[in-house]
Length: 76
Image (cartoon, rainbow, N blue to C red; front, side, top):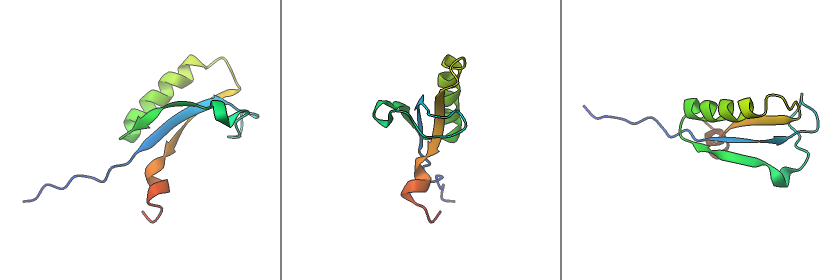
């Protein structure tokens, strides 16, 4: 029986100061903090949570998880 590995699903965690806390428009896109790229959603959420906790008192700071694999293969 052949062992199949699940397809790689990369996730980017990034954040920065946003113009409006309800949106995703960054005040200065060139200064976005890239936390890293992670090979699983769970690892990305852990990294996101750690960064979000560090900035919890600053309403204008927002960190997000971006599913890079959906950008690379939009047909999936």
